[in-house]
Length: 438
Image 1 (cartoon, one colour):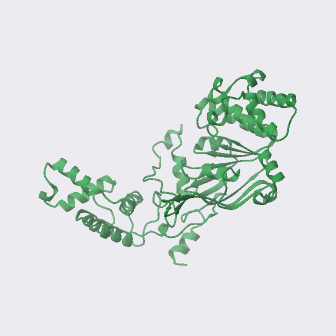
Image 2 (cartoon, rainbow, N blue to C red):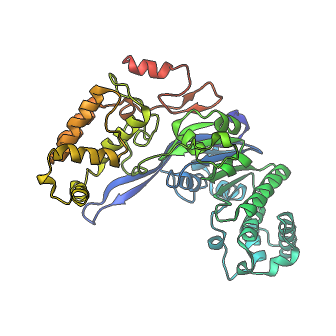
């Protein structure tokens, strides 16, 4: 995709929300909902922004269309920076860039008929001829599978799928060049979703509209998108043509998302990648790779070599110690219930506490790397002896990973995609350089 063909260019877009303390403190932090994303959309193209809830997709959409004022970055529409628009250009932009909201119920005025709702953008943009507005509304309703007579009915008289069709008709009323659809089918039944997506595809082909689809549903993205951007915690971690991203994903987060999709292929069942841990607080994102606190493929520390799943489990213990700590009282209560005696009266109580913590984090009784197992035993002994700070320090020193302090940049892969991962498929050049200290 070349910049010359682009309807929309987003360059290093950021949207940070201030966190307020009391009236004396003022701003005490910032939630980094969108933290430097870039992508392009060409005429007649559908581009997806996909990721878990809370990754920043909707904030990005609202910032692009200026329902929210971006913190920084550039948004170019038809090659012009929207921040430099005159009042007349802003009005033209509002006509040419429309939005379909996630919840159709909340986007319609219940006191207005459907015809009035669909005609409202036309009225706002200067069409005074009531008969002409009515004709356009009736034509649009028929195009989305409704009838002319539906224009006189009210929102509560329609099903969810019908209301989303009406929302699409309203978005088309001003003959826009760009539509941003925020989870346009998430509230609908699966059968209705297919009908609405088919409608979007047909109308896009008919009108040549560029569409940005915001979704957490990978099935929706695969069905309608030409190009996909995968977001995690405010950043794009992988981008590429839809087929390339789905068939040869290069980022561990993309692979985890794709593995969660239902598949009819019995050979692929049981291959789900489960993401552990919680999505970090966007007001205090992790250093280095933001995904490292949950990544199942996180790079192991130098000098150790054991099963990757066990390494992830050890990292989960590290994350818990660093963020919330271990609830030792709860561990003692469990042990006392099992043994019917106070922990202090048990022989080798330190080892028992350590084994309970291992079980909680699904760490085996012994790691295949004896040196790593010795480090873990010493850390768990510190926890058992109520010195979690020493346990944190020991694990941070011995089990440090490059993913904690090196922020990966988006780079080309062998798969037609770009990915932000130290393990990306680019002949290992980035990882080799990091490990060599370059």
